[in-house]
Image: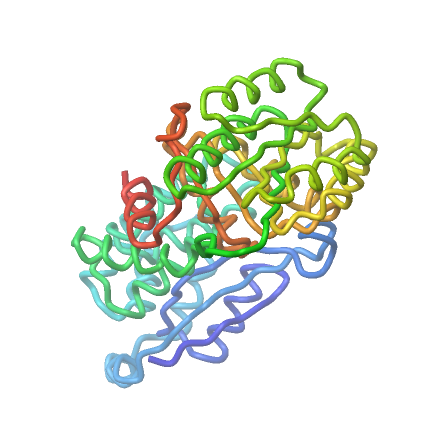
Length: 398
């Protein structure tokens, strides 16, 4: 099969390019709309993209059947306007080159067109790429797409998944094939931080993030892990003097585990604290939760982190946070401090892992740990790609 991608200001214009280049027997693999240029996806020019293919053997068969180009063109135009669904079905059949597959696609298209009749104007134009995508996918792929959308996976990743499965001839109705392929895809999207190597030198790890994501509990879990399981000498430092409860919480954990806890009232205190605990293997630094909307708070964080001179900076995110809020948090905190690890908390409080995959794929910041509960130190895991991918795949298909 010959596969090409076409861009144009509208779906209609992109379809014209497809027909002109590949002919009426082309197969539309998927369509999408996007913005070209602009800043972070905003203020760009609206564009449409169609990926289409043509089977050279099918092209020969269609020429023998003498499908009238005018009939296909008329049906194609009426598909875009939502008129004459019988002609639409004929167009889909011409594109697919198979009567049986055309019936399936026409049935899906009929459902989509019925829904579109309740909308008018811009809404119908905006959703036409979704109609075409649904119409030209098998029922199995349509079901899979709905599951991935429900899991809040980004549209371009969904298209990438479906395109990859089509390319590798994965049967969407065979669960075992889908699970195997998705496990491999998710594994490639996840980047995992290597375990902490044995070292003669002290390692300082700072934890940053917004309020309420569970930084203090996460630090206590890590302190227990390093001290009790890995036999490292550990000290904890908290700069979260805004919340007295957070300071007392960390001190309580420290007393239980026999780990010293220091309070840094200012960035300048860090030099003396680090010197005091220079013989420790690991120093865990808990910073105050900061709002990504506050330039002043982020500037304070920047100064504090610079004074601490950490070897690693872990951004702690809650899996329950909305995806676009996560993006903003990463961008804002990343502009203030050099984040080089991520920790996800509260995975037990959500059934939607799509945002997790989106972030791992888009930002490529390695995942250091993830937690699924409040128990110290049990509910904290160092990610292992295979088992984590299986967990995520199960969620995506659930």
